[in-house]
Amino acid sequence: MKFSILFLSLLLSLQFFCQAPPPPPVIPHVGDTVVGHPGVYKLVESMPEYPGGEDAMMKFIQKSIQYPDSARENDVQGRVVIGFIVNEDGSLSDITVRKSVSWDIDREALRVVKRMPKFKPGMQDGKPVRVQFTLPIMFKLITNSSKSKRK
Image 1 (tube, rainbow, N blue to C red):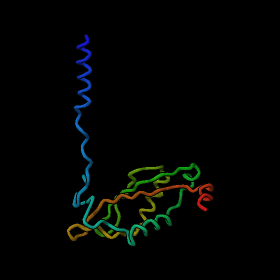
Image 2: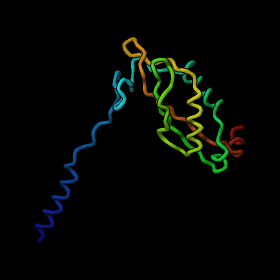
Image 3: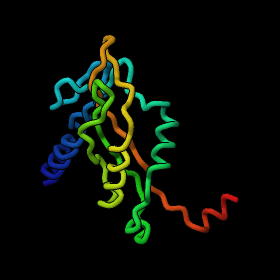
Image 4: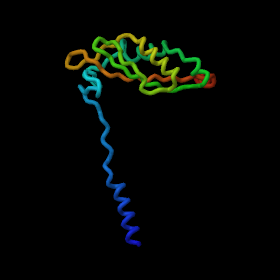
């Protein structure tokens, strides 16, 4: 009986120690394409760029965002992640919500991204190519108490 229990516990412990390690994370390399989207790259030699750079893009987003009343009333906050493709001509397509906060905040983030001007396209081997792009947009309410703390 003791031998059976010892053998069973040894067998169970070996099962936990003999499991294969998790696979390493997939890190895109320059020139890798997006699975299911032929001709769309994850990472290229020269990534797409908003006209004026990242600071100009953040200013555009801050100026354009209109916090939805329903989200404000219900104190809804969070980060929406928008995915899109920057095409060879710099236009944006396939604009989708990758990480949702709420329907009203998601809709506002989509509205703002759809209004963005054309990007400088991504380049691979000296040619403009389609590139997948991910943009997080933070929605945060500023309360009166946090305003007074900043002063």
